[in-house]
Length: 232
Image (cartoon, rainbow, N blue to C red; front, side, top):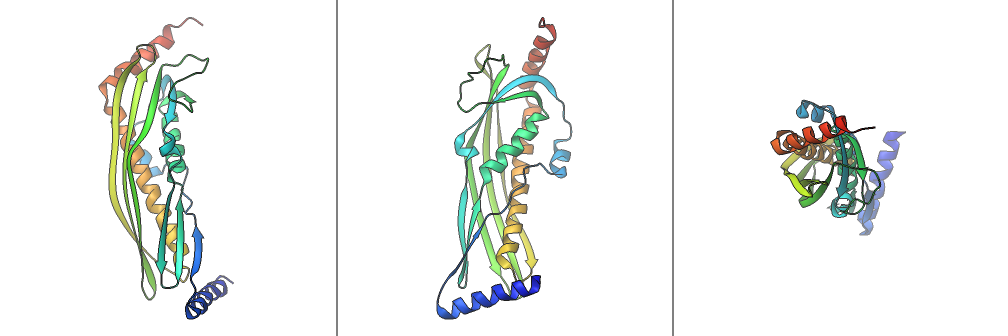
């Protein structure tokens, strides 16, 4: 049944090509909402800290969407990539292993009633995504180039001062090959794999930079000690 559908797809493309028409395909690669096992292994050590952190993700990053068209003969694939949502969800999950309590805020200022220790601001400094697609006789090859530059700033709410600033800069090009008559659908799968890998690396780098910050470590000790001595 699958082979029959594939033949029908190719036949339609051929017919439209003869007629001089363009076939348009709308494709939305599904990005994972979880970090990979490889990502956790690269983090190495996870300590859950008794810290109450408010998290503000810049809407430009959280809502980032990349659209790109790739045309092969008479077929155009419209790829729509919801990178911001995938990055944000993965980052929140990673931070939930780092801080015991996380408050999500929609504006840079915390207006909640609970007492918090600090605010973390996540901003996008630069993001570039380029998708490449080459079609051979029996196989296709894809090239996914990504560049992520993310900045995280943590501020102590009592002292109203910046505790630390860390940046994550990752750039790489991933090439994949695949076979099968459903070329655009295979490219969609390969792009999703490459983008998931790139997002994971950017988040892992961010967490590892936080782990290396002596200033952040000092303030985490201070915040945890505050909770231990607080009268119920």
